[in-house]
Each structure stands twice: as structure tokens, then as C-alpha cells.
Image (cartoon, rainbow, N blue to C red; front, side, top):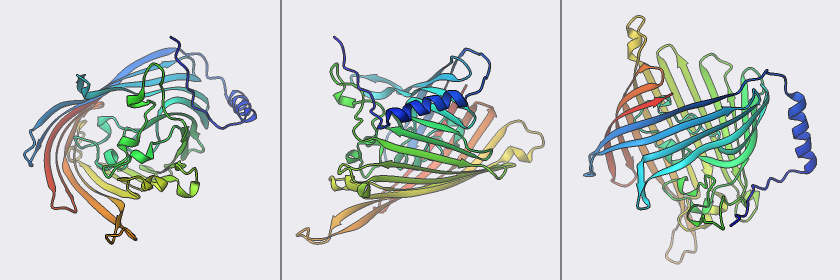
Length: 379
């Protein structure tokens, strides 16, 4: 049986497409010839113990394989395939999925093109999500809930270096199902290139009726300091930009000697998605983190032992009635906080061992404390 093909329909004129192709070909320079295939990967494992009566957990959180192929110095295919939580059995358990799969054309240092399943350029952790890039056993809660890493969608876009200090990425992709956002975050709204439970022999792919724009600028003029600004825009169900889903994110990373500093903050307006029951009207939050390499106190140590502390705060706003007749409403905020501290040991590049303690709380009397041990690798 022949399956129908569903393509992401991009609203570009034929002249614009021809111009882009000609521009890429004309602007490209000769890089020489080289063909190679690269296989790599990363993974992480953890032990977690909780104070609220939940049973302690051992897990292989992620097992990921990279598969990249360079056709020539301009054309490359890149991919990641991920298994989460060991296995799926009887329809429940972990997850098996493609995390990235896209073609890349590098015309020059200042412009390139990508198309396929791409990880959106939002925040710090979403694109650089390998376990060696963060010190805690798990990713920051902010980067699980407010920015639902790993957030990837099917689409196309351009990237490059606008100057020696300024780089950019710009993508047009499938959008979120914003009516599926909950008071627990954006994660249920992601499509990730699949129709999900509706996928069958007669229906495949994802919903391309709500395209979205995402973009990021990185600026690194000062040595050791990297500043980022990213955003995401998706028209609402009313197709009015005045009630669009809008996300803005600012981030900063600083490395100097034994110190590593990181901060990020984001604000989200869900637009007309908040008309659906249970969808928050606004989400806001951020975190700050400081880490210090204790082994820098030992002269010429080739290893790294970081102690770190991170404070996170994020909030959800929701419309609530102020009288029994529902004649008027007000916005009520639910606030979450988390403090995480611990140690991360790097005996070599590509390997990290971790121990941390996390305290979380909400406006309600609920509190949770969690001790974790973890290990991660990348090769």
C-alpha cells in the first residue's frame, strides 16, 4: 500500500526559493573534497533517593547514538537516536525516538542551511544537552519545564556567523499544539515530528497547520563571556498575531579561571491557547548557577572537581473567577522554587561523575528533597 506523503508547506514564493539556491551556490567557496562517516554518542545513568516516601530509583536515563555523514565539505547529514529509561514493554516504560535528523549545507562561514528534524535554538541546555555540559545529576528544572528540552521540531532554516563575535540561527518549523500546554509546562505540547497516537498507515508526520519561527543570537565579544538572546513565535488558533504564542529567553555564560557562571531567564505568553481549560496564560522563570573547580587549588592538576550551587524560580499564571457567577476573573500565580548543590568530577574530557542534593517547593505546603548520584559520557 502506498502511503501519502505529507510535506511541511513553507510559504515562500518560487522566486524566493530560486534566489536562495542561486545565492548559496554563488556564495559558496571551494573547500576541497572529503567524505567520512562519524559514529559517536552520549549517555547518562543515575541513582535518586527521595524524602517523601517514594521508592529510590536506578535508571539509565539516556542512551544516544550519533550518526553523521559528510558527503563533501559542504553537504552533511547529522542525526541522534535516543533510548530513554532502558526499554518500552507493553506500551509503557521509556521512549525510543529520533532526537535530530537533518541535512546541512554550508555555503560559507556566514551562511548555511538546514532542513529536517532540528533542535530549536532556545536557551542554553536545549541544544547543548549532553550530560557533560551541566553539573547536576538531572538537567535544571527550568530546562525541563519552562524550556522543554530536548525541544525539536521538523522544519528548515539558516545559520552562520554574522561577524567574528555574532552568530545566528533562524528556523521555520511545525508549531506546538499550544492547547495541550498544562500547569506543568510545555512538554505535552511538543510535536517532535510525529502525529503521536494518531500515527498510522494512512496518517503520518505532524501537524503543519501552525508554523512557528524560532531564532537565536549569540554574542561573545568579551573573552570567556557568551551572551544569548532567543525567541519563538507561533500564531494562535484565531490566526491573529495579537494573540500569538510568544516566548523570549535571555542567557549568559562566563568562564574565567576556576569559575563557571551561568544564568538564564524566559517569559512566555500563551496567547489564545489560554482560552482552553487548564492552559496557563503566562509562564516566567529563570535560574542562576555558580561553579568552582576545587582542583585548581592544586598546581597543574589535569582533572576538574567542581562544586556548584543553583537557584531556580518559575511561575505559572492562570485566570481564576473572583465571584461565584464567573462574571469577572483575575490572574493567579503558582510559584515554584528549587535549590540544587553538589559536586561534579571530570577525570577526562567526555566523562563526568556527579553527586547533588535538590530541594523544591511550591506555594502550597508541598516540599521535596532528593539526593542523586550520576555518571555521564560523550564520545
